Image (cartoon, rainbow, N blue to C red; front, side):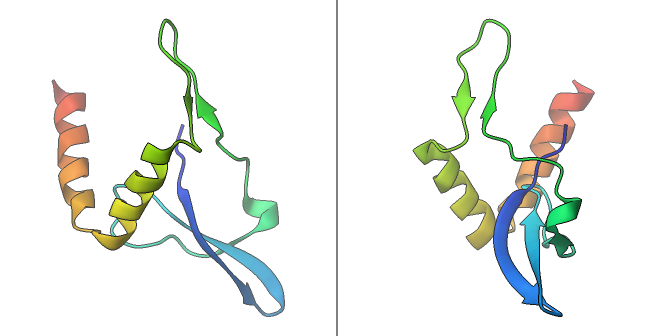
Length: 86
């Protein structure tokens, strides 16, 4: 599953568009319309682990860090790639 954070909305040719960004991406994605959005992630639930809700304070802090310090995405990407290889 891939989920990107909603960064902002804007009108383009009198139609509402959403702008998203993945945590490990340096730039935002191309604007999409409502019809192109598949769903909204509200929580992550894993077996034998506590359910994590996306409206928690940590999530807002994480989002803020990714937006205002985009270089941190590079470090996150390296970390994730190391975890996949190991």
